[in-house]
Length: 264
Image (cartoon, rainbow, N blue to C red; front, side, top):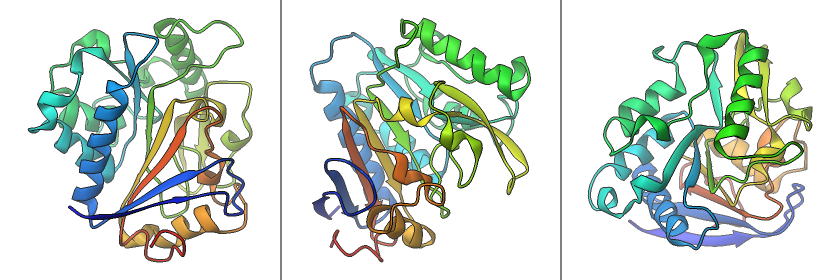
């Protein structure tokens, strides 16, 4: 596995501080880099015993899961400390093939030493999208001991990015982009004609570390726009992600990075 690693500062896209962009040969190398970073973050001193992680859907996180449950990472991960949440979920039953929870269960949770009390999924079966978002926010507040007016501070939030520049279920020109008074919100996505449940921008930006995992030539235009283009988060929601007191890492493959100017 080889990589070209660079750090990009504020390149006009509205992010404060430094964006750490690491470019790898392919999806497998991106997944291994993500696994290395997770292990490093777990090894860092933390004020709490739990390592709270928010998982993502998509093909790139699936590759990361495969790496994590195979040697040597299976032995290096502190599985006992992990508490699993989801940064977004499709509004489908937990057993549906489209469910982010189901994907994680099949590729990670069922293959690793994980107990039921470590898993905090979005309860999509418990009501309409708005109710489910409210219930999940309440679950997070309880599970992470979050007081009213406070935001959770996740140790790691994993994100993918779509060819349209969306992340989590923060899609272009949708209402969730504007939500600042909730931790979790329902978001109707017209182009998909579907409801999603998603973390809001303030929750993501309060994490200790946010890691984008991006692979594929179909992401090249969006990645260049997000990192180096004009700041236009309504069109490219991933530009909204800028942790105020944490680290932002982009782990991308060469195909996705093909149109970047500063990461070569």
